[in-house]
Length: 338
Image (cartoon, rainbow, N blue to C red; front, side, top):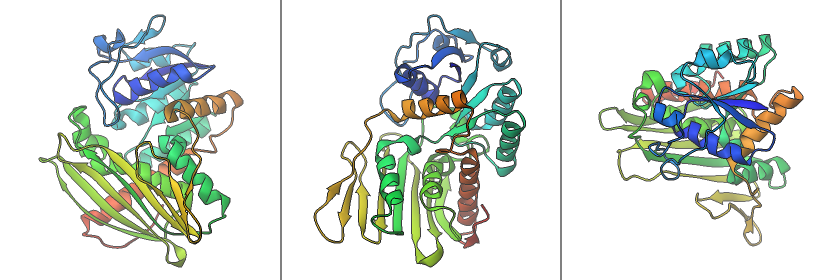
């Protein structure tokens, strides 16, 4: 499959690097308006995971400075949209109209209406649309999903998902909530999506937190309440820009034991009610390569991405918007209208 990457910032460069481990997928074209990046110099790229960017070999890769020209290229079969969030809708719909399959970085969109338009165009043009919610392919979260789906340890009773980092010093658009949704939205949509993936939609939710745009702070602490009294907490966001490190972790308590992952290289473990701790088996893979390979497989087979359905990605946007609404209302409980 011939794939084009739109945008060569942190996620675009990450996906370009991951493509080297994806058999059957060729990086055929890239889009950027930065001549240095088009030449393969991604050393100035920064993000909240890993170090600085690297040099990329774009020899033989077609280079575009206008999205429309790339979408008109008949040799491109699919596009990987790594543009700022506020540009996702136009690029995705334009690609599907041009007959291309679409992998789009998270969050899928900034509002329900926009996400709905993207879904309708995927159906209208019979194209594969998938949001790159990489946690669905991240080894520690794959291990968690498998443990929950097995049902051996019973139903979820309580869970906590944490994710936080310094406010970014790159990509000025990220600091504008009108363009990115804000720090809590952009960061915690990962965990909102994971909760929907594992546990379905909550009945009610509430959220508190704070946002100080001048200081770069955008924190949210949400409680999702499920039938039967089960509760999920999603907490984190942006802290002061600078040295504050990125981290993510989870604690999931099931009826028969608790699964804990503290981030980093240590694998998650089950701590059962009876018996010793059990390390959970994690797949040995690059999650970015795994998600691109899965997307390519769906395109090749002409099947919808069952592991990462676009309607669930749209629901994650809705869930985050409800959390932000509750935070704005000082923690008011809201019925989950997702």
